[in-house]
Length: 203
Image (cartoon, rainbow, N blue to C red):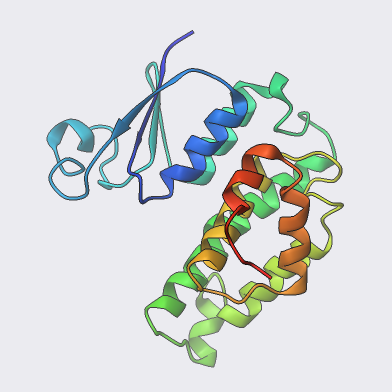
């Protein structure tokens, strides 16, 4: 088996991947890159032309984008139980909320942080519509969690969505709603994720 190498930075979305790798309990090499010169080096740009982290190298395979890396790892080590079985009904929610969070939700929060408000016509052509609509969509997914997004078993999508919500709450990007608190309470039953929640006053 080829060695997994994670290129990351302590203050980056790479923390989500690092958490997931630790939960999978698989060996990997961690390479810390500084913002600026190291991420823009010719060597790293050959791995990720976006000069962003995280990036995962698995032999000849390169995977970028946090959600894609988590999905790749969950399928690579599917015996670990962090991905629904191929062809199972749970795969629908798994794909849906991975891509919804990585796409519309990420875009909605980015636009909100930049102080940009789309008018009605712009909302029609944007992938997320409006922040209010995207956030409502996210809460719909959390409302249907039983207690996890794919049902009774915690999967990689919970690690991805959960870490995203923890980050937003920790840095006061959102006020946690009862649905968010309920979902994070479910995640706290997992010892690795519980460590993230300790010390965060999310109530």
